[in-house]
Length: 158
Image 1 (cartoon, rainbow, N blue to C red):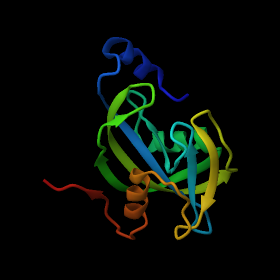
Image 2: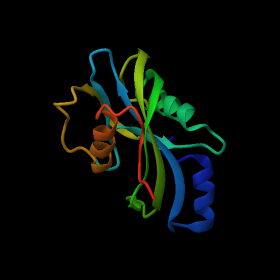
Image 3: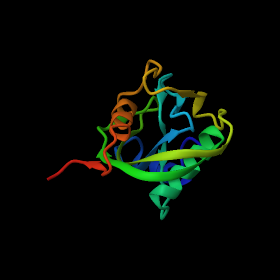
């Protein structure tokens, strides 16, 4: 489901005006250290798995759910890697949103990589030094933070 029902309901009230939403991003690694990426249907670019939290949903649970729904891969959360605020994003349909993004490094535990919904055109594994192009700028940033080897999460300090 590309747009959660609760967001569609909000859109009936606010139209295309900006929405502040909570999202998650998943940097999923397999046993060989490859990264799982999807090629998005809306812009044709490669990206880490990401999605919107449902009301009341825990971020780590949302990341596990999004990975399974979008790629068919089962994964477990290893650690939080970053908390960021995105720039406002304008979608092809005119909707505007800005996200509080919570990113996790995850380990694949089963399943097989496949396109699981209409949000993506392709799903594939890539070595970190052989990432495909075009890659979304936000995914490049999330991957750099996740793969930097820091034990603590990145966040902007006040």
